[in-house]
Image (tube, rainbow, N blue to C red; front, top):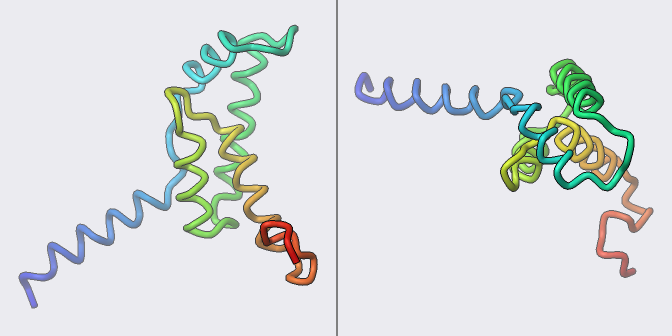
Amino acid sequence: MPALLPVLFTASQLVLVADTLPKFDAAKACRAAAEASVSLGRSADDCKRDEEEARVQLSRQWDRYTATQRKDCVRLSSLGNSPSYVELLTCLEMAKQAKDLPESSGMGTSGQR
């Protein structure tokens, strides 16, 4: 049994790390957004402000989402070279709303009945 303690401790730490809000580089995300910008009139400062607001909201609401939702959305929002808190928050909100749809709505399927 004592030989298993380090394994159990390490495994529990991995779970804790996976369940924390990731740290993204908002400046990098905003530079990438500016380079691919299709909306005129949005400055890098506007982008950084949006990223910070999303990060604060996520830090308050992180526990509202399931571990699967968090894992999947972190992965999706991290695709490419510039992960974004705004994209992460949007993904999590959509995942939560989709989960909360009533079964009778048919919206949780591929649209076929």
